[in-house]
Amino acid sequence: MREIFVRLDRCVGCHSCELACAVEHSRSRTLFGAIAETPRPRRRLYVEYVLERKIPFLCRHCEDAPCVTVCRTGALTQDPLTRIVTHNPDRCIGCWMCTMVCPYGVVGREWERRIALKCDRCPDREVPACVEACPTRALVFMEEEEFARLARREAAKEVAQSYRVIP
Image 1 (tube, rainbow, N blue to C red):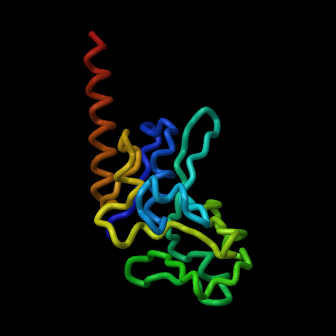
Image 2 (tube, rainbow, N blue to C red):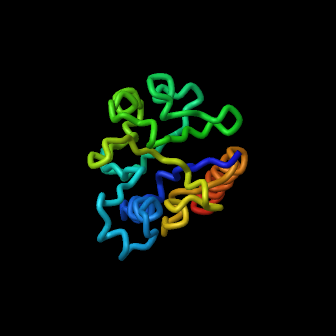
């Protein structure tokens, strides 16, 4: 199963992923249309700046998702096969329990409709909007094994380059 992985060394904090996410979840699905919408479209991932690093945070679709466990109305459910946590806004009562228990702080709020908002991995798209919009490819959508192979290749490349400078 493909997942969204973050390559921390590549994020420049441009917030293109946040903007693409908000537009993708707007009614119009266009930037200019989304600007005029009410309620204003909201992002489902967050780029944080901590310890001089930019770090994109989004739902990790935890194996034992605390947000699903605490949801009293069943608005949050988890697919047992893919582990993707989905949100049904019609069942959400805006109690914000999911927001309180999320270990990553990535369950947001839409105050106008009083519902929770979270990453759904853009189920209508081949590649999530945030990944597609990332100009530095800090966000990648791939299988875990493929991501590990990519990390190993990049680490091996750094090691190989360090041997060139040593006589």
